[in-house]
Amino acid sequence: MENKKRKIYKISIDRKACIGAATCIIVAPDAFELDLENIAIVRSNAMSLGDDTLLIAAQSCPTSAIILYNDDGKQIFPKLV
Ligand code: SF4
Image: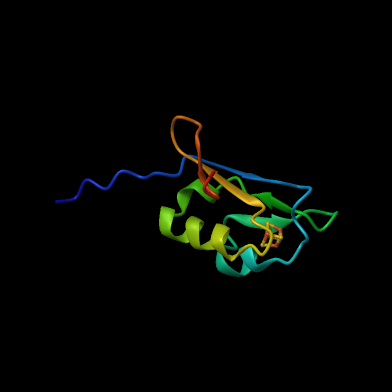
């Protein structure tokens, strides 16, 4: 049955945590790019990518600077403990 609701509705970057390593851009070049300060920014079409790609990109970040939120605005990655 095809009723796979997406879980990721919003992405943000913790600019203080980002070190410009750019692995997120290697994983998802349509979702992220570096700004003039070498800090990642979320591209306008990022949400056109699937949850899987966005999650892999977030997981690839060495400093966990990519934060993912659900449709309630709750942080779903990195997991809050
Ligand atoms: S992988 Fe993380 S540290 Fe590297 S550019 Fe992306 S957000 Fe920044």
